[in-house]
Structures are given as C-alpha cells and as structure tokens.
Amino acid sequence: MHIYEPGAETYLPDANPMPVAIDDHVQAVYRDSLLYLVSGWHDTANVNTVQIYDPANDTWQQGSALPESPGSYVFGASGIIVGDTLYMAGGAGNRTDGDFPVQPYFTKGYIHPEDPTLIDWTQDIDPKAGIYRSAAFERDGKVVWLGGSVDSYNYDGISYRGKPVNPRAEALVYNPVDGSLSVSTGFLLKVMDLRGTATFSTGEIYIAGGMLADQVVTDSLQILTY
Image (cartoon, rainbow, N blue to C red; front, side):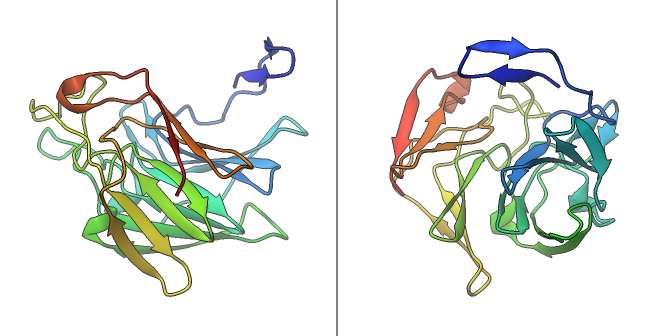
C-alpha cells in the first residue's frame, strides 16, 4: 500500500498491506474518508471480497462480500461510489474453457453510513453492462462508464482466445431516478485499458493514456465536458 504526498512530490512510508492481495479490482472512495477495494484477481482466481482501508488510522476491515453469483468474482470491472451506493459494471469472470468471459452484470451496493462495513448488494443482468476496463465517473447524479472493451484481454491487448481486442467508443449511463441503463455514442475517442478518471471542480473530466485500436498504447490526455 503506497502513499504519495502530492504537495511534496514524494512517497511516504508504505501503509499496512491489504489483507488479500489483488489486482484489477474496483477501487472507490467513500465520503472522502474510506477506500473500498472490491473483487479482483488473487493468485489463481477472482475473489468476491470487499476490503476497506481507513487512511486516518492505517487499518483494514472486511466489508460484506459480493453476492454468490458468476458475475461477482471478476477482474477488470469498473465502479464508483456516489452518495452511499457503490455502482459496478462488467469485468471478466473466472476461467471457462480457456477464456475469461466478460460478465453482463450491473451491481449496486448500499453502504450503511452507521457501519460502512455493511453493504446491501443487488445485481441485475444486462448485456449493456458487459464492459471491461472502462473508466467511471459521476455527473449530475448519473453514473457514466467510458470506453473499455467488450472482451477481456491480457496486457498486450490480445484476448485469451488469441484474438486482437479493439476498444469501444460508447458510454454506459445509469440513471438512478428511473433505474435505467442506456448507451451513449459519438463523442469519445476509442480507448480501452482505463483505470479511472480525474474530475476537476471546473467540470472537466480527464482521461490519461489507455490503449487504442491495434494494440497501440497512447500517451494522450483527453479532456471531456460531459
């Protein structure tokens, strides 16, 4: 668990390590105080654990595990916490016939403010939610996932079936008012292998790097106004 101090442009001593070592997990911040690490790849398979880090006390707690379903054990999913709810979409499931199929699951987890380790999970199957390594952000109460792909792949952009994977240009939009998932197109450079966004107080959304078509890694910085 590395800690970076932006003001001094230096790293501080490492914090306590996470209890379960994972990568390609969903990472989200709750109430500007707790860091949630959800699912991800551990050693030989995905896990459904929820690990909660408290920076103020340098401590870890276990949250309510994800539901027992094929779409709950994933790597490469994307998510964000808005208010008291964590929203999570897609990700690749455990190995099936040599592949790690992307899961069409849309997951919501209500975090109890009085005890943030208690999470009420609900999960729906929706083909639109079958995305991999996209970037999530919130705007005007809606949750948006940008870019990513519809197939899982290794670091080289080649799927586990040995085929090249290209990025998608669509945005997945969730509206909590009516509970709808929709797809928006036509405004984003096709890019995948994203991990998140940076949203500034002026409203711009920054996306750094990623992978373009034909397995080309980009050093571009995209600035979006959504």
